Length: 114
Image (cartoon, rainbow, N blue to C red):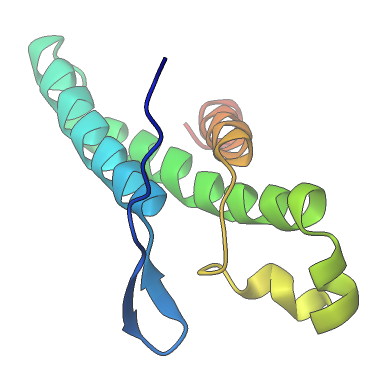
């Protein structure tokens, strides 16, 4: 049996809070980007291309992570706060949305930009 424990949320200032999930996501992105850059150097892949791919994965990933969170997990917030809640990127993310957004961003990069 896996024990359950609670890691508290740290309030930074105003509506901004440091969630354990968000901290793990940020750590995963930074470590993953560093591994990708090292692998690119080993495989003689242009670092500018690798950094562009990372950016095209991370930015759409965060946008879609928030949108999926609002649309599928908290749709009542749209009725309560209006569609402006879709622009409040600090108010929740979904890992499924992040994966979908990253895949879409990288696909767009390789299909249309590079």
